[in-house]
Image (cartoon, rainbow, N blue to C red; front, side, top):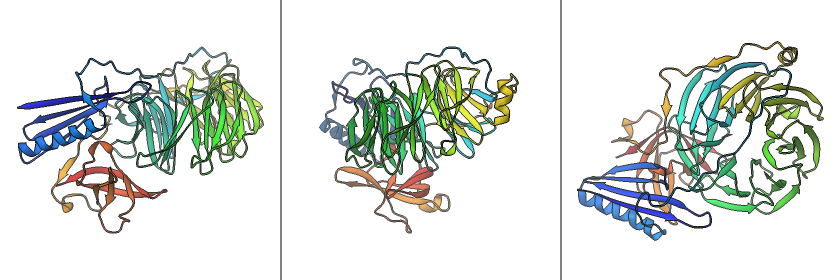
Length: 478
């Protein structure tokens, strides 16, 4: 006989809005959970007897009831709305079009971008993240449960902040939810520095969370709609409708606040300065030390995104009218060109290439070399190559289940064993294999943690802040 228990936790005033469903089918216990109105994620466990399966299910239900969940009827409570960024995109007024080398259409408005030495990453509102090599060939696709707000990197780890309130680690072929902010938090932007997550949201609140998904501190800003969050070892730089502020990294207080010309719509940082793109057609460069405005870069429409070449030698901006600009460090406008598509919602410069993600869902690679730009200003541009999806493109989805192995020697050579333990009411993951510091935490998929269980992972990499990150496949050790 199959039995199902469905629970919900919904709080007024912006609190939790999630469900938890436990199904027992003979020896199998299935747990499905997530935001109310969404399909959620499913985790399955098999037990040696039906009695043990029933006991495990009762324990899971009891834990949720003690946290405030209550029996409910699925479908009666409506899903909480997710804030989508409302943007307009007018045709460009520039006389010439940028020298676009290649363009990849993702199928939905794109916000997330990251470019490293080998790959380009783009994430869109449909929950798709695609990786391409630097020549524009598509390599893989990650299919996430909800829309991607942004992509950020921390060393060679890369994360996607999504509308479901989770931040997914995409560093291995098996993506997993590394941070679970809240299923109803409207993530506007995020940044990660040495494993510490910094979140800016719709209400104008800054939240800081460590690598073990434990809340560290939070601050409300003077405004709302916080689209800018950047962090380094000295401060957290936050921008909203009222300006830019710097906060001490330990939450000790505000270091400075600078009003900007219009609400902040995007932020960028270099070693000594932060750059705020604003609704009043400006990019303002602020000194990290004291918030002093060092330079202003004037555009012709509201600025949706900005970036710089290394050290801030050149400053790039994109506006709501499908144009892209380049300025000298002192604010002198060098050129303005049309994107050849929609308005760029995010951008990054690397090795004389400017990468844009746009309102029409495209990842665009622009040749930003001096020679190419001069030719474009004269009306000579290359024929843009439209990148197509490969017929057998690998697709990776978040981990909610793991393959079992009966012994360590069944796993690949060099694998590492970790164990889930309960400390102070929280489930931690510790290293069991010799040669590692067993006291350090491991950033591990939250969906497959089970107290007392041991797992075999391909490899672990130490990170700043006293924890390890998982790379590669994860297997349950029986």
